[in-house]
Image 1 (tube, rainbow, N blue to C red):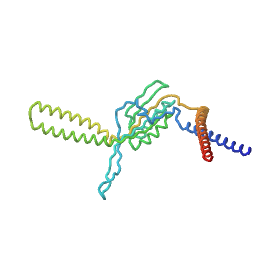
Image 2 (image 1 turned 30 degrees about the vertical axis):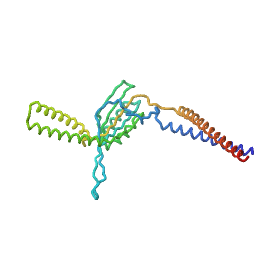
Image 3 (image 1 turned 180 degrees about the vertical axis):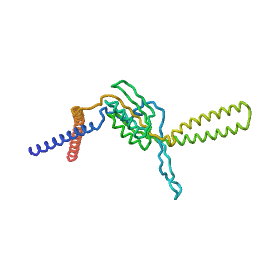
Image 4 (image 1 turned 90 degrees about the vertical axis):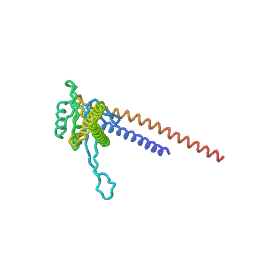
Length: 286
């Protein structure tokens, strides 16, 4: 009886130790796959929001839509979208990494649409907004994330088809109003009415010009995706193996003790429940 109990006790201890070791290595492996800063950009409206650049880049994607007419070829749908990559990186080799970034931009036929460079040696900072042809977007992005030590990165894609349609609809509406006003002006009338019509036509002309600028961003020859790239000079953060082991060990002990406490109370509750059930059975039997 004693030997059997000892074997069961050893087995339980081995299982508990194995669980602790597995949890420890899980945390250690998890730490190696996280950035040193442990930053999270999921809830961020933009990791490079400090770059103030108003130009918006749009691209098109043609695909086949479903036709409502039987035996008719699918209609071609032109989707307009905005795609933005944001990369924030740090490097102790600022000049070399800057040259590498500019070489990547040139290699993939991209354009620097905004540039901001500041700081003295040792604390330099370079912000770039890059317009890249849609077909080269992924290649440029993959090239830039290899520069320095990436601190944060994200890609955002937004559909702008409805906005494009609304701008076109507004343009057509204004053109119709302008045509009607010009026809009214040709019929003559009082000077004040004539001046009022003239001012109204000039106002519509101005709105049409503004719409033309906005719609110009959607033109095929202006199609670009956007890459916001920030290069900061500084020592790249590195975490030693001993520090990682310490963090993993502290975390494992804390979580493991919590699990053991929860397991203890679960077993205790189950034991008390069984005792109560047994007493109720004995009470009924009597």
